[in-house]
Length: 306
View 1 (spheres, rainbow, N blue to C red):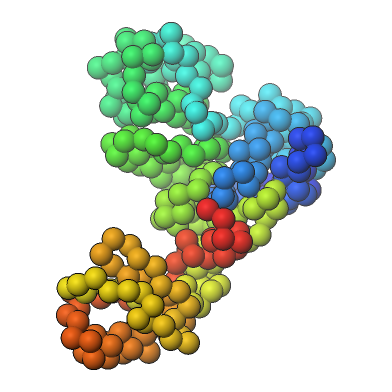
View 2: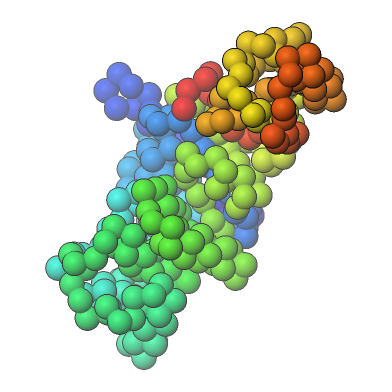
């Protein structure tokens, strides 16, 4: 039995179909990425999966429990971190955690120990008595995640959990996600940070305009397009990308002082670059051959939308 089972899910707002008849499974203990450009239907989907929205059609089960028929039981098995967080800013950090623990039915004896443990883990123990309104965005998000995992949920939903956060908060949140997964929690991560999904997830699902366009392991999706391989090169002087036009080079992009040449034949491309550099008297400062890019596969699968 999968941890999350989605069958024929559909949601419409007025004339706009936000989620269009999607189906997929997430296995127990899996780290699952849900990717898509802005407006693709990611947040609507996660709200349907967690019972915040009622679908027009379709069905969602969490650990075999039908979300529509037995919402309370389903919610007790999940933790949810929405995009903007959901902490009570007039309460202290510790009061937020204790309240969340009470919602999930934690006994009083466990509340004190668990809340203080999480406050320490997230580097907020010294601020535990301060109102959350005095916290930075990153600190508020840490509290939001601590509240969502205080009952050690079987399934954890995260909607853009690291968006706009400082480096320290991002690292803490990523480490927590990994630790929860290692303890057995199923992770459903909604993001448009492709590299984050590539690094963390066992499988990724790409949605665009409310429809699933691909679902597979990141490496397989990267390999879907042979010419997403690239040669990244820097010269001792500025060089125009069109200098390297060739039938085996599909596109040339500039990244700072580097050029990235997308190709289906890295060997020929490297030899081509070296020959042109010798011919034009250019000195190669650095050159790197990169494997297929998940980002490029994402762009192609979503029709070029970011």
